Length: 172
Ligand code: GNR
Ligand code: NI
Image (cartoon, rainbow, N blue to C red; front, side, top):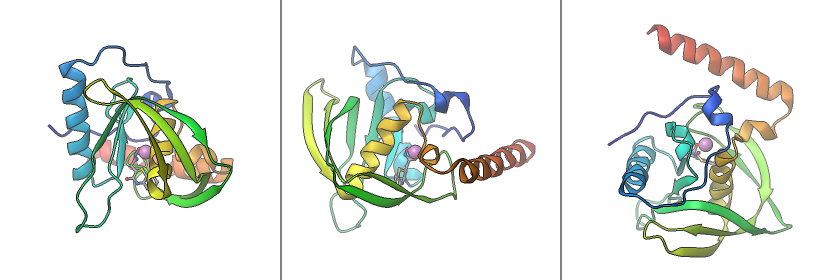
């Protein structure tokens, strides 16, 4: 089932999400719903707080070419274990801040640990778009958005436009 994606500004997008300690069918079902919602958007990642659930769960699939097989990843309690000194700049977007994009600098390579949907601990190195995306998603679990990396003026401009968009949507 597709879920509704919260739009910035929303207090739930600013809160720290709770660790998952028991993998329930409900949480696995939520992960499936999040993948469906992400692919439908379309997006390359989604964090549980974006669908209003304050649990440390993210999904991602940064395979962008149609010729390559998809690679849906479900991560419970993801953590960045180490980051490269090397930095990368990507133009980021967010499904909770539609139609706004900005360059964000982050570590180019990260090692991430997480619990998979079977409850098995996993560890993997990510680079390129995968590294950017997984850091963007883990930020969501800390109540952090990509616009928080921008200068205050730019961030305020985007937030004001989002307030207007949400007001117009509520009227329609
Ligand atoms: O779909 C998304 N694209 C994207 C592009 C560059 C950097 C990060 C992202 S994540 C975003 C989906 C989203 O909002 N995930 O939280
Ligand atoms: Ni996002």
